[in-house]
Image (cartoon, rainbow, N blue to C red; front, side, top):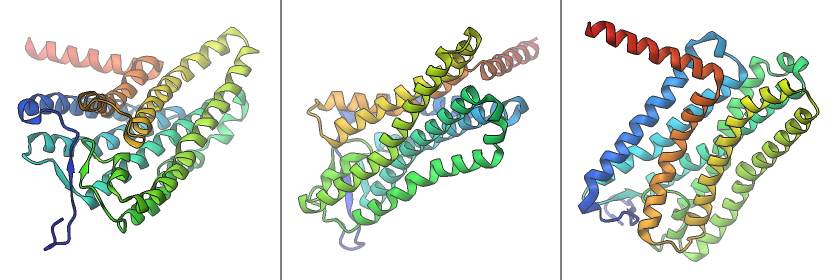
Amino acid sequence: MNDQFNVTYITFGGHVELNKYRFLYFAIMFTAYILILCSNSTILCLIWIKKNLHEPMYIFIAGLLLNSVMFSTNIYPELLIDFLSDKQITTHSLCSFQAFIYYSLTGSEFFLLAAMAYDRYVAICKPLQYTTIMKKTTIIILLGLAWLLPACQLVPSVVMSQSYKICSFTLNGIFCNNAISKLYCDTSRTTYIIYGVFILLNTVFLPLLFILFTYTKIFMICYQSCREVRKKAAQTCLPHLLVLVSFSGLCSYDIIVARLEMNLPKVARFILTLQVVSYHPLFNPIVYGLKMKEISKHLTKLFCEGKLNIWQSSC
């Protein structure tokens, strides 16, 4: 606590042998961050430029990729600075803000996946009504709700946390997430946890139930349809389901390890955390770049043109 400026400092206690491996950690995570920015931004730009990708499904994919970029940017710059710093500290206000952005974007991911599931449901189960239902206005509303609803629900928790009494100043992690609740005294922590469960139900479990219900309906319709319809459904739905499973795994880790404080060795917790913040933001562009036929086609064309230009310039 800095009484002169009334600032509360939090120390990150989740790093492992930082003095010995700081430059290795920095190199690995910096490379991962650059790959995340480049891979997600490339597909985002393709969707923005190519007119045949200006369809609801691809717009929602662009929203998902943008969400990955923001998610990573919320974590990586602070993480990289900490790797090179003598002290791994942050203020309580900044820590609360980072946790707010982290869980706001996590909720947005589930709402975006729910919007994509609804889009696939209308396209496969109600193809004649697709253009009428999935209008430009509908897409804008769904995108707006996906980013605004989780953020609005999290605002009260951020406001409440500023008035809570802190009993511990060392956070068991390398960035601010659910572990921040363990810093508060027992009397303050109860309210914070109860409201956290409420947010979890609204931003994770309800969208997840909607997604599972929607894809169940899609599979039931496809089962009764011809082979061509089943093939088309598999091509467009499989990438979304892979991303859903991947992101659900990330959330499960966050709940089990960060919130419930599962008894993991410090090294295992550190490695898992680094994998979590690296894996999913890289997984999205790989899945959509390889599995979505139109995006894959444009990416192949882009790389072939790039190789040709390099070859011509070398000659």
